[in-house]
Length: 244
Image (cartoon, rainbow, N blue to C red; front, top):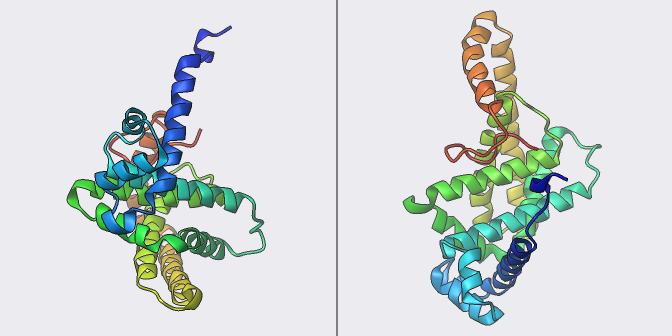
């Protein structure tokens, strides 16, 4: 038997305990976020309300409130992935699938607008801007992965970078939208995606030009080399290099 294939039961139990503490704390945090934001004060109140061991809470959220906000964000991404996996979107054009995914991600947090607004303010701070950028990237990666993206070249990055920008603009628009059922936001989503698709068509025409194709070839090969280097995460790149 391969010794590395077995796990330490003690470590497994500790991991389960931290995961349980994280879930319990998050469940009680939203009641405090509208008043105290995604702060250490909110974390402390949620830990007390949940009856969680403070030592486990420190393991679950080592950086305090910012890790609490990120855990909540990632949980909503996981919910999005599960809901998209349960749907059959084959009858939609691809651009409509993306629009649906963005609208669904907003629908998932529709009852938590204050929490989203507070998180947006937190990640706008210079000290947490990188965390916010990575969170946007992970949402974009969640959508592309759920929609079956199998790209392995430079487009893996450009798709996620482009969708990150679209998602962030739609999120900000939604925060100020008061139309019934966020109808204005849905129209905005489609306009943004139409703009992106027009740009993609422009790029496709450029690539058909022999001179332009040569100019684009070098950066594409560099990104391919980076992507194919290994399966590990890189701290200097958002998201992950490859899907296992």
